[in-house]
Amino acid sequence: MKKTTAVLTAIVAAAALFTTGCSKSNEKKIRIGVIQLLEHPALDKNYQGFVDGLAEAGYVNKKNIIIDYQNAQGEQANCVTIAEKLINDRDDLIFAIATPAAQAVANLTQTIPVLISSVTDPESAKLVKSNAMPETNVTGTSDLTPCAAQMNLLKKIVPNAKTVGMIYCSSEQNSFFQIQLAKAECDKLGLKYVDGTVSNSNEIQQVAQSLCGKCDVIYSPTDNMIAAGMATVAQVALENKIPTIVGEEGMVQAGGLATYGINYYELGKQTAKMAVEILKGKNPAEMPIQYLEKCDLSINQETAEKLGITIPESF
Image (cartoon, rainbow, N blue to C red; front, side, top):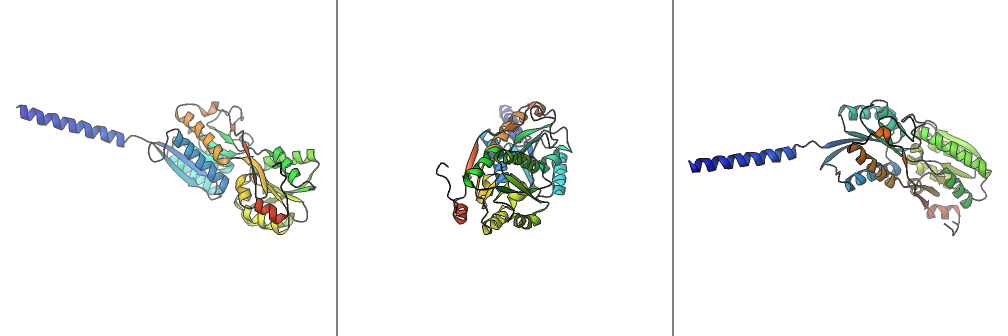
């Protein structure tokens, strides 16, 4: 009898251990869907900063969370398709990188928390009721470019410049917003300007060439289409000995002359902190849009040498 009881006790203990092990392995992981507009250094760094920021807070991909990363390859139709997928998957949180991606998700769900980043002005993009108080299921971080600092940088590096050629995508709300800020700064500095707009990537080279002869320096904000095609812009500018002041570091690395801009990796990490707050129960509707305070100066010395420009020692 004692032997039978001992066997039964062992069986019960083993069953309990097995059940406990199963419950841990089957524990529901948090699902975070990610939709990125397209691949270029700024947006890639934004995403990586987000993933690393989550990991630092204890939310590690494939361990206690599942990150479903999707790239729309610059196509608006793909943004909508991906947004529908992430919503149908009933993700706990959706992270949208760049304005078109954010708009695609926000237009399709008012219940799933949506974090956005690499969006210049969420309010004018109609993603939130106001940047100070979203009052929707959407919040996140802005990549608002320090246009005043960039125009002052332009004046210091190219002091004899009189006309600025502004190249950007006409259909990107964030680009239009930044260009208006840049033009206002040009007015203050006594600089003239001429627009060079593109509607698709195939037009970048032609538009860049059309600006040559019309301007002394080319400027582009953090425009996704131009950022992805920056190597083309830089090549045309170099061939015509025209300096380029750009929106962010990745565009400098692709051949642009200089920028004073935000750090997209740090922007991603800042967005991750907001994600942790939401996952712990905070309401996105009550979370103001956040901005990155620190900006970085980036100068491409190789480009400067090819242009025959001496960078002031003060930099």
